[in-house]
Image 1 (cartoon, rainbow, N blue to C red):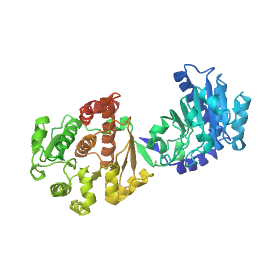
Image 2: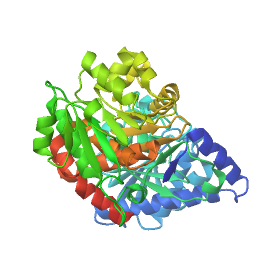
Image 3: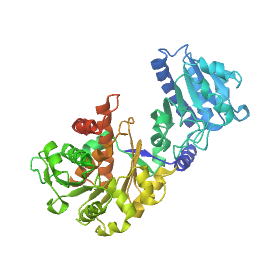
Length: 480
């Protein structure tokens, strides 16, 4: 897994590392990493490194120092480097001296638009991890002149480093180079960060358990259930699907199909769409009610069941079954309206809630807000459940405080029915015996990968995402 740490913890670890490192060594190591990435981007975007034109946007402090030292290293490779000093009196002294000695050029704000418009690459060294809020007016005035790819130092300036929020003018980077460890902004606002490259400066030994984790494809591949020589259709987990209604029969078909395609275990469907499910998925054992469904190792409940009395009865029956439950869509709305329905759940029985932002607000009484990580952790504690908060970056919190982040490769999942597909995937992993927090993270990963494979650059339906599940599982299994 990839670890992600808050900026306060990163700064504390950096101070410990600085205390036992020669003065300036860490900055030069970090800046050299920036320069290497800049050269790679120049080669790709401009077709050359030597004789290309790079502009540094230099703020006060160490972030600006990183940019200036990177400019010095680029000058050594024959790059024409110009630095725009946004706060000349507070520019990093050693970095500025090194940049000048290497032949770097300095310009003021009045000349900045002209040099920016002619640049092959811009390096954003305006603010660092200590900064909060949008860009100040002088820096914001330069945004309209950014025509070249942007390489951000640690984070795009103007984006909150811990929450990823943007409250005003901010940089959008093509690539972000960060040092020592990833920070929350890199997963909470990937659209602003672009590709994130990590430079090792020896920081990890100074850090303890991360605040957020991100599953690697290898992690997902190793966790995904596959049949062994002694397995049969029952031993791999039987998934129950309680979904659909006369109004929303498609939810039942999608959730059931995702469970069928996710693993080799058995799937039982219970609900009013039994005939439609049977027609689309003949391998499914379909019945009209939860009471007739037979034994399962996990239930998925909620997609399309409605929010009336019938839906409430189904939810109560599923919660009282004594097996892990993935509660999605209408199930979360019912819990918000009738919190007493949760009394049917046996204490300690695993529960996974999968709300989008609106459902989350109904469940908890408050929108996720700027600090989505804190909000999802609080919800997990409140409900003693794993909570999967959907979004372009999906967050998964366990009651013990662990948090996973899954970053989608695009916005292809913003389509009706995609949540039903995710719930079927997740339910099949719960039935297969995966720990709920890991099951939710693995399901979110394969769900997003399936969308990317199905879309191939154009919008895709939930049915298309579902059809790509085997290809997505195959891809992660090859890595695992």
